[in-house]
Image (cartoon, rainbow over all chains, first blue to last red; front, top):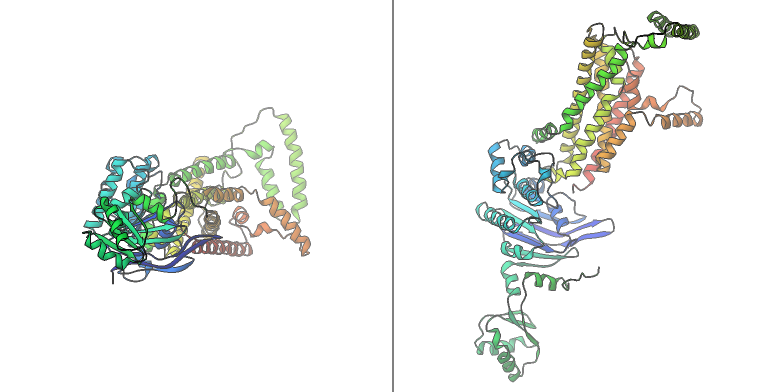
Length: 308
Length: 307
């Protein structure tokens, strides 16, 4: 059995008449970077709020493992940046962090200056946080989330408002935190390309429901260029495929085969299957990046939004 | 956990500009008020001599002397008109009604003027309102399972700040006595200490009302507005009408007044000579308001999502 840090069971949140999140089951492995992908209003933030202890689930539950005591104890080991960073605009970055540090019983000035340096805000000095750029505010939000050296970091759109260099820096920082400190990270982002460079696991959420949960490897496989063969006779088709020298293939289900190598030989493959009198429903090359795959899975045509 | 929350909240308050500005404003307002009552010859302006006033005050304290005092006052009024007509020049500055009063008496005037709770309302509105305008509690998910504790710490901070304002008012009263009065007679006795503590309790209850409103609405404006309305006595007309309606409905005598059961009126009316019945009623009122608003705020906090 996998070593999970967090498992949710039928997590549901209803606001008055609106079902924001419905029966969500996600499994976050210790040490992973778990990407939560979904459109605006899909329910990502609500899930994050519930597991951070900021909102109560209407029904369902979640369980943290590996923490001593109850989930209330686990909350003290969670760092969260959810929605906009919660900062006092009239205070400096240092003072904003100090408020949280004191609540955690941390009185060391160096701890705060190190955090400021870690997120790249060293130059902010006595500048009030209210005058920070959007990117600086995001960095401060990340620094606040890191107070108390959390085991689990929940970051809701942390790269919003950052310039390309800032995005790269944050990505590098999160990777380092994950690798060096073993921090498990749950991250959501609209910039799927960026998320794909970071996440080890994914959940795709649409209209409050988890559509798909997969590892990075599985997802990459799904997004790879491939020949997709749809047939009723998968078991008969396999020997044909192998006899033609295609070695990199996978049987997705009892009707679908994906072939990943020698895409240019699709015609030969089609002919050989026909010769062997294997009824092929469809055969074709599919290629998609994470974004296209996401749109496909959620049934959204680019530029359009599905009706509720 | 309590100590950590206390330190964090204390630091937050120490970084709020209003923490320092409001007591300074309070001192200025109290000094101005006291200047009017101590250094402006209000009686003289009205044409009364101090002797006239003392006579009126002495007679007015007994029911029998009421009519006599009224007549004296009426006569004094006639005299004053004559005097004013006679004296084409009069002086504004001089010995005001509180010129030679002890600091404790000046203090009751200053507390009863309700400037302190007006400023407390502003502080509470800003302090609690900031939690919602900045989303501060999102950072403190460490307390997510211990919201009662955090709420308690914040109420403690409000109580302590109310004490600070109370002490500042007292210092201002001393300062006034030194600058504008006949001299500094602190007048600290049992009655003063009791007055100080009960009015502090009333102030805390008032702070709790404003805090509860701010929590309920998640709006600093709502909390401050309520505080200003209450401290400025703008709801007293409504209270008077409601009192009259209750009097009629339940056939009560004319002495019944809903205002007697409000924090602000008790704070305004209470003085060093208040009788035991008044004091007990005031304490009960303060406690009831505090407990009710504290619990309602707590209930909202416990039930509601942080973000």
